[in-house]
Length: 553
Image 1 (cartoon, rainbow, N blue to C red):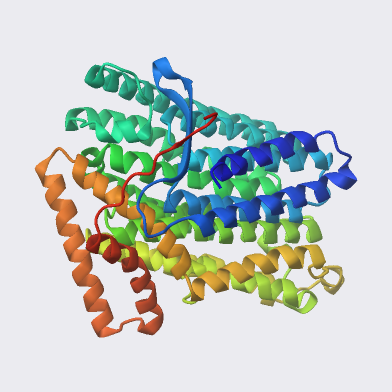
Image 2: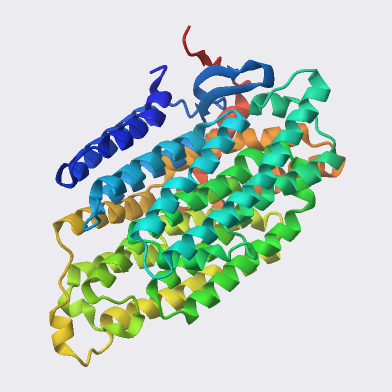
C-alpha cells in the first residue's frame, strides 16, 4: 500500500503511452480495462484511507532538486481523494462511451494521459510539482479540441490555451516569489506546501500573492469576467472533450482555492471575500440567464456550469465547515451531472445532426429510456431533493448563510433559475408536438453501450442523493484542517475573530435546523454527517502528521 498513490498516478500514464501503438479495434478494450483497474485502485485507496485522521496520508517523497526544495511529494486528504475518485469514474465512463473517433487509439490515449495528470494535480504536496501537473493538463485537451473538434476548433483550442497558459504564468510568478520569501525566512529554498504553511506570512504580502494565484484559478473555473474562452471551447470541442472540461478541468480551479488560497492567504481571502462572493452571485445569475437564452443545447449546459460553479465559490468563501464541505461535494456532484448532460447532448446530436433545441420535439414517444435518463439528470441539475445535486447546493448555501444571509438568499436563485432553463429545454425536447413524424421515427433509443454508461451516472446521482454520508465524511476530514490552518495562520485579529464567530454561528444554526426539523430525517442525516468528523476531532487530540515514505529507501 506504500506506493499505491504513485501507482495510481503513473499507471494511466504508461497505459496511455502504450495504447498509441495499438490498433483501433483493440485500443478501446485496452483503455476500458486500464481505466477499470485504475478505478479499483482508487477504491482501494479510499478503503485504506483513515477518515478519522486529519493528516495527509499515503505520502511518497523523492527529492528531485534538493538545493531548490523541489521534490516529487504526493499525498491525499479527504478533499483530494474525493476528486481523485471523480476523475477515475468520469474517465472510465468516457472511455466506455467513446464511439466513432478515428484514430480511436489516440483519443483513448488522451483520456488516460489526462487521468494521470489530474491524479497528480489532486495529490501534489509540492507546489512546483502541482504547477507542472497543472500546466500539463492543457495538452490532452488541446489535442482533443484541435483534432476532433468541430467548427472553429483551432481558434477555440488556441483561445483556451492562451487564456489558461498566460494566467498560469502569473501564478508561477507568485509561486517563485513565495519560495523567495521562504528563503529569506529560513535561509533555504523549499516549495513544500507543509513548509509554506508553517511559515508566518504578513498580511501585506498575502494580498498580492493571493491575487497571483487567484487570476489563474479564476480563468480555470471560470469566474466572470474570465470566462471568454468557455463558450468557444465547449461549443467546438467533441462530446468527450466537453465532458472532461466540465467534469474535471473546472474542478482544478476550485480545488486550488481550497488547497492553496484559503490556508496560505487567510487574511487576504477574508479581506477580498465579499468581492469574490459578489462575483459568485454574478456567475449564478449571468450563467442562468444566458443559458435560458440559448438555442444550442451544448451552450445551455456550458453556461449552466458557470452558474453551478458560482454556488461552489459561495460555499468556499463561507469559511465554514459545512459550506466548504458542501462546495467540495458540489464539485463532485457537478462532475457527475455535467458529464452525463454533455453525453446526453452528444447522443441527441448524433441522432439528429443538430444541437438546436427546436430541431425535433416529442422524443419521449420514440425514445422512452433516453427520456427517463435525461429526466433524472435534469432533476439533479435543478437540485431536486434525493438527487446528488441537492446535497451540495443545500450545504453550500447553508454555510454562506452564517456569513452573509442576503447572499445566501440571492444564491438560492440558482435553484429557480436552473429549473427555468432546464425544465423548459426538457419539455420542448421530449413533450413538444413534432410536425415531421418521419424525423421522429428515425430517432432511435439509447443502445446498450449508452444505456450502461448513463445508467451508472444515474445510479451515482440517486445513490449519493439519498445517502451522501460516506462521501461527506471523507470530505469533512479534509476540510477541517483547512479551517484550522486558516485560524492558526491569520495575522489580523479581525480574521481570527471572524473564523471563531463563524464556527460558533454554524453550530447554533445546525442545532436550530435539527430542532425545527425543517427538512426531516433526510436533512438531519446530511447535517449529522458533516458534524461527525468535527465532533470526533474536537474530543480527541490532534492527529500526528504522517511521515512521508522516501522513495528508494
